[in-house]
Length: 586
Ligand code: DMJ
Picture 1 (tube, helix red, strand yellow):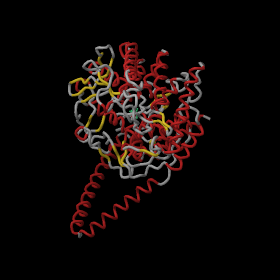
Picture 2 (cartoon, helix red, strand yellow):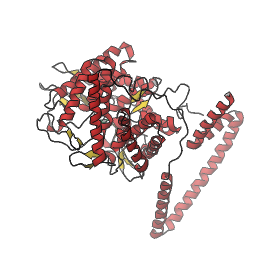
Picture 3 (cartoon, helix red, strand yellow):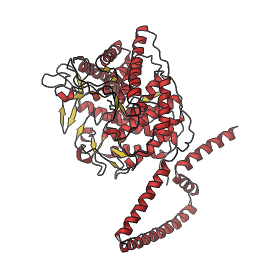
Picture 4 (tube, protein in one colour):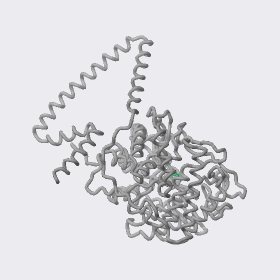
């Protein structure tokens, strides 16, 4: 019996190695042969390698000479043939899904039900489910297959983060919410669309970060929840398309990559051609799962390389600037933020630790150090007694907080347990203070919905000043923080605040064709932006639903939510070592 088991595991292991890593068997052979004989053999190999290099060199020189003798027309024809060959190879590579090696499925618990015992809470939960139905059905009717929906124009919508693709972002982003809410018909409908239509071989330049958190995160979560192989296959196909983005001099990925050609580049607006901290720093969770599921070490190695590179760099005042140049490996402008451009980098440090069953202590330490510097330099109390997180710009603190930074209340609470020097109580309190401030930013508006950014300056307390900061685009961060705070404290005010937000969304953002963002939360007669963001279904409604569910739905012991609210299971790796995480062999 024991023997059979061992053989089976061996087979699986071998299958993984051969399937993914042609170098692996070489490394192992060398290790086996290690000894004096091997050293001799090594020398011989070295010489033959040198001969080979010399021969290659000569051949290349010869070829270059021949090329110079050729006419322009001949050269153009040659280039054309080579191009067609590359295209053919690419097509072949795209052809059909490859089978993936089997891995043990992590224990999947608490993925359904969660019905609260209190009838009034159940009623609220039912209302949120109805809102999800309205958002989904509207998208189904008017925007199906498009990335997002224009709920007033009643047609499809997309933004530059998805290039010119039509990848059904809302379907992929919404799947796990549908599953958790028990909307199984809708889930099946989404699954069928993905099986029949989701194709990543398109000529579109997409955001690596957005595609990772929404698509790879969404597909992996759908896979773990439902066990349907198609989601895993699609996630891996897409991940392969993102890998060329890492081909930079430093290994810090480009912000964008063309899914077909693999050519990458950065946003034109980013400081000195830099990549963005919150973008290249928000890949870890998904990439660890990809290596776990496929046995391909590449994903794990790419994100660990980023971590190592960051660890070696000097940090001004202990802070991580938002910009890093992927060519030079140097920081761009010294701006630091827990809101846009920085936010989920910090979140993923903490969640890498949680997702590893608290074994990735390097990630935890990095998180603790980063948060300590943030507290010292960015977190202040306003004159009115509101704790806020400002933005650090070249040594100066801007007393402005973004809606995006409101997620940090939940993050501080989630990270409280396990923080150094017995500071758990302190961080839970900090989470509560941020939740309070962000609630104030909602409460001080006419619509009871929060602005995109709010100030604590010249007598201003948690209100937006500039017209272009007064919009609300169905963002989740404040509700996310309410949910985490609710889970850790069970203080009823968090459900109360969540309900206020849900009612305001239903009253001011709901239209017959779905839900829309609004342009001014201080106006009693707001205009719509006519976009139903995919994260409204992925995050905002999911967090609301969880807020009104019992804690045994998606328990924290088993699940960690990625930054787009896609739950990934904690990997109790025990004695399993992720391929690529072994110490380098000689
Ligand atoms: C989401 O796509 C993610 O939460 C991301 O980390 C930043 N913000 C948007 C929603 O506001």
